[in-house]
Length: 270
Image (cartoon, rainbow, N blue to C red):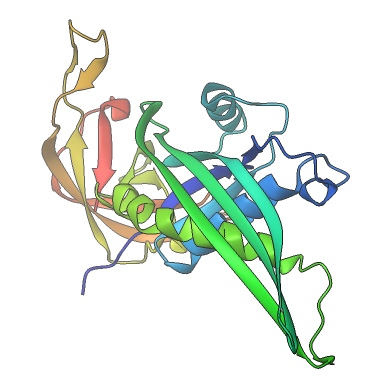
């Protein structure tokens, strides 16, 4: 069976773009609902088994460029960055009183937006919006029945429902391209590549080495386009090690083809 290597994903705390001034939206750090949204999405993506999630709490950094720059300065290599916002959030209470009964419903509504950024190019490759609603109801008949105060869990449920609309498309976009890594150095007869056991690399796993394609400029947009690379070699993993999943490396051995001394022009795919 084919080993599915995990992508590294950094997720920024969602910004809170709602206009509501209701106090339950904000905690002492100034942003409760944004933190809840990013935590829910991070857990959903992690549960798929396809990703290693890395949380960014860059409250002072508001743009993708600033966050990517911070990641590079810290030497943290990730494949994708997710930036999101909670654009709408509201709560309401509805009551229905009859001759013998009385019911009450609490309703929470949320709308979230996300942008998926490919870190190596800095380009937004996917944008999406999701909306969700959560309801809890209580009912009394002739004075007997359940009563409920403010239901804080509705916030999570509404955000979770909104994020459910996003998850499958995010997963599809982040797994549609082959897993990619880079050759960091040569040591004796072996080479060192980024990535290790946490991503699924193991002894004996064979990977392909490609020479990067030529960069050309699109005269209409001014954007640089990388032409498809060419397969030049194959490598096999010897061993992996590292302090944590974000700085793991692997030693590999050439099993086919040849590489020259300029290792920066190569990339590794599964």
